Length: 553
Ligand code: AMP
Image (tube, rainbow, N blue to C red; front, side):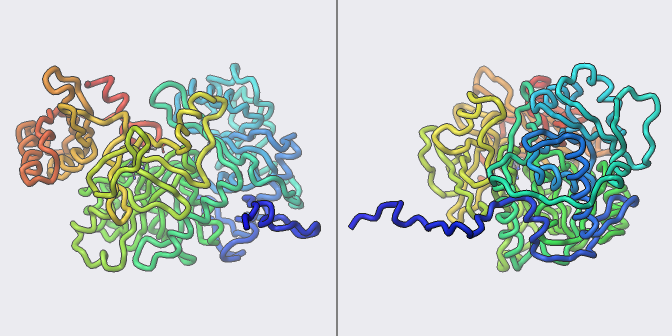
């Protein structure tokens, strides 16, 4: 007999509670309820989880008193702080949308995002008042400004009509606030892509999506026994900004786990290393550029970095960097995702057996893009959306479905349709996958270099060149070429003191050795080398290949 779907739907008992997946539940129903556990802001402020909850209630009262209603947008310009963590919770919990402004965008781009997101209230760290002064006359939607400052002083001479300072307003606000239930599909957050081409695009995530992302990440990090776990006794410090993809969503995971959290303010290498040591930080995440900067800092030599679990993402980690970190005892491994994906899609952890491999062998596993998180349906496909073999060699585009992907770009129907063409989200990343399901990104579709019709992986080539002892940093882009269509161009920054000791010939010879071993395609030997002083970066510290192509290709 045929079963109709309506026969199997669970009947609703009128008085049964229909539990919505809301962000408030991450705060109020955690894995570990640890009211005296600490949250630290630089060397300036320490609060407990008990206080965090009270301050979140006060913040909700304060915002409501300022006229914030469900559906309004509350925007923030701050470095990573306990205040930001409070806003991560309080704003969505009253049904409003949190707009985390990327403070590294240009003032014009910041103005564009404020207008586009239709921000109603803006909380601004005093450091960003000069930016705000430049654009304020052209901001149409914001009706109230709140000052965030570490020294409680109202800045002199500013024309911004602040309604008050955060701490003072919070102290006056009521600690009584009942958070109502609402639809779990309500928009909770919005922020903008880094906008290397054209104006930034807005993405957005619901309560349901953020809760499921938190659980998905926790399932992977919490279930590993070998290494790279996030556990109750860890101490967490983000080193990817809270304005960029909710600091990879990890502050939500950390709060649900009830661990000690350390917020470092602006990312200054000395402060980060000092906090790491003083507060006993054991779990962080950052882009490769920051790891590189930390390891090179003179203070790093004096600090014990052993046991620091560090997810590296946002860009591919080179094996050279990975080995350097492993030698310092740091447990580095890759995570992959993008603004559109909340962000985490894959993580590259080792199985217990793999931990017996040599550092060199482990580095190639830790630098892979990794295995998809639970509930992430990830495929590598050709142009016709046909899945490609899991042979570790056939490259195609990564497309995904997951419960936590943006439904589209804010107010941009056409681009949203393109993002979701064929019912899967297109990442624009080119990758291969092996039979274990482990993914390795070889390029962005836009960065792919085609030499005589054959794809050459810029990431592979960068990895090889970075292995040369004189090389500090390298970016590979495609350069139009009459004979070959395109040839790879390596832009190389040499290490301090090595200038003049290495020639382009030596580096091409170094590349040829890898090609001769059959490790990479023969086409890589066509690489040209150009020495440069620095490599252009995006607002979140990644190589800006669009700018590099404009400049050099
Ligand atoms: P964004 O939206 O600015 O966070 O950038 C997302 C893009 O960064 C992805 O589409 C990838 O191209 C790149 N990316 C992120 N994580 C990794 C990774 N682990 N390896 C290589 N590329 C990455």
